[in-house]
Amino acid sequence: MVSSSAGLVTGLTAAALVTIGFLGHQASTSAPPDPGRVRASGTPAPGASKAPRDHRRPEALPAGSGKGERVVYSVDDDRVWLVDPGDRVRRTFRVTPSGVDPAPGTYAVTSRSKRVTGSDGIPVEHVVRFTSVRGVVIGFSAAVDGSMAKPDPARRTGGIRETRADGDAMWRFATVGQRVVVVP
Image 1: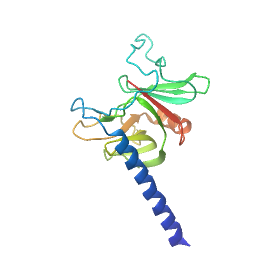
Image 2: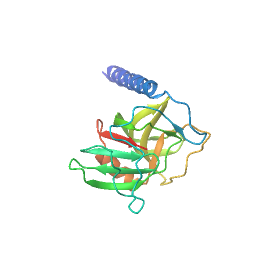
Image 3: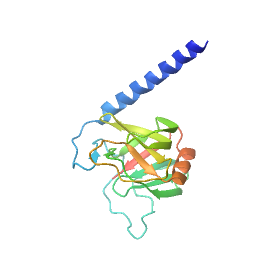
Image 4: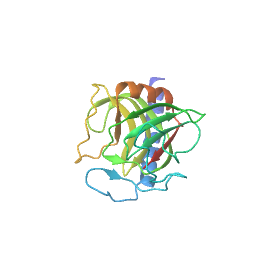
């Protein structure tokens, strides 16, 4: 019985890795625009534009980020919004970006982990993954020690860092299948 359970877990893990690899291959079509942050190319989300933000209200939800319940992530502003089904912002917060940026577009949460070691070697919790870029899995996480240091530009990392409180809010909000809209 124990060996069949272990075989099942191994099979499910292998299937998840194949899926992540496949999604990463689909998302990997661009060269890095600069050596600091790698940005993937892709089809923009409908309505996603480089429209100027309201700099007097950086917490304002970006126009063109869709409708309905979703996580919105701005790669240019390094900010996240958790939006309820009625298009009301339930929480917004700043993040520390990863070394690899996802392309603007619409994704879905593909997997979650309560606690793991991040691609930078730091123990993280409340990991919410939604895409990959050239083999680098992209997702939100909070460092267990509370740190939010900028990533080493020489390393290709995919962890978008949140505070522990914001990571807890993301964990409760963004279950598998939840829409994630990435805007410039």
